[in-house]
Length: 145
Image 1: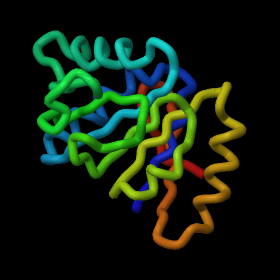
Image 2 (image 1 turned 90 degrees about the vertical axis):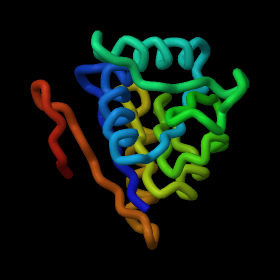
Image 3 (image 1 turned 135 degrees about the horizontal axis):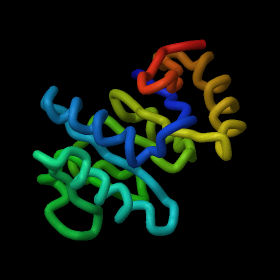
């Protein structure tokens, strides 16, 4: 399984997540987005609705019904009620449940960088886990050490 570490230095997760969600949907995949922060799920929902003026990313929120139908499901818990094989940890908190998915996207910023470093070291030596690190340079994402 692959874990992509995204260090948010310029843009907040609300601006980065929609592009990843759109790409996964185009590939026929589903995504579970987990964020346990107060008020985060409505912010993420708004970002998915407003990402591009000409379209929106179809999604739902856990507890609102029809979770199994949602290509992108927003939740405070890492339970894939939409049968997602991809998980995005949007709040900077690693959850070992992410290791049961095909791919994990772990977003962190300056306030959660210490936890991300600890997680990187732990996962770097874990069999069957391929961690990758991404950082923002200008307007682009670059893979790096």
